[in-house]
Image 1: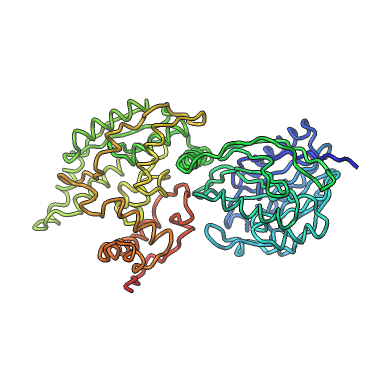
Image 2: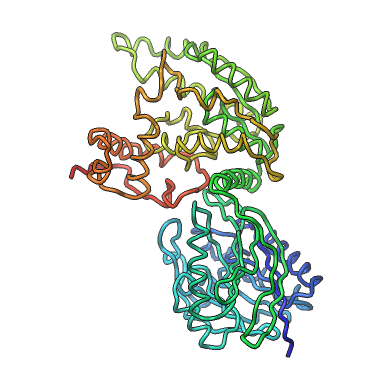
Length: 552
């Protein structure tokens, strides 16, 4: 029996529902593994269907297409290495999240996921049946145990497979990005290695899908938790690694060691990847957005340029009588530095027509936020018209602080098909802008250098919907607001705890009230890349109508 096992890891980017395309990517990876002399080519969880499928996986025709394609893939990969691929499979009346091993022209082994996550963005108990713990299977000289994703976050599956004779743990994953998630994954995988004494392969999906961004960052651990291989985050990778049989069992040889970027860099790349894949997978190649001269739209334009190239970014300045000269200058300078197209359309004519049409109904009523919202909605209408006419996807630009408290106009500045900074608090927007001005990498399609003018970052934020308006006229200063939101949204802290931290009770209660009454706006908002464990949508599900408030 050979004392060497060669494994090709395919950290690749599938598209949900593109069964034929995903199968073609799997076959190409298998061919590369065959050339490299691999014994097994491994792909991540749910690769053939794409992930997450949500209720699409219940469609009988979808299930049949998956089964037919899997069997055809097995036939196409008969003469060469085995192929392991994640796929949902219907067996009788039960639907399982599976990892199938294809060898010799047939499906030689099927591993069914045992622990089904039902928290955060996951709803697998609703979609799938829990499988019994699967024993190990043999590929060439080695017996492999495969805990599928969540199975490796518990000790029972890996322990049972080790006790049944597994010599290597191969963990296929569909684990989406969230800030600091890498350390959590590593801690769980090190625990499995320590408990079983076996080497472990952690293989993760990469790519954006709706609001989720799968960050790859796959790795291999030897017993003792020693890192043998680290694949890059947020990009596809195909890497072949050898395992050698020693007196102490199988050990991975040392492979590539990609560096892990800092937190700001990871967030930024997740936003670029999330937007780029949303466009590519939806069939868009260009975007349009309103460039106001403020920091949020400046960052969104930069993310778009880095995702698809500045030549595909169309910015539009939509000034009113309240737009400051600085904003006009800053928007023009921003477009010049980014080297993207900038047009200007005044909203004063449409605004006058709208106010004239409403004048008989509003007679005797003082001006208020209604007139401010008219300006925002006119901008949204004009931008949507440009989007419809040109086929460019409209991007919306509200940060998480504004999204949280409803400091945005529904059907106005909330118009758009995607929001790259939806899960980024305002204080972090400033940090990311400064980071991008100081850093440039090969994966960025936009220009290098300080593309966001410093004055945009440094000036007091303003919606400019009335004379001399500033955001902190309506909201607490953003450092205060974001600290309160971090407690309320990210950690579900009681108001009393935030007051004990030094926050003013009335301010905290007001922020909590704004968060609660803005749920209906968030329900209608554009999707955006998930960066935290409490992103608005699947991570945090609240009723639209809710009268309860924390007054303890």
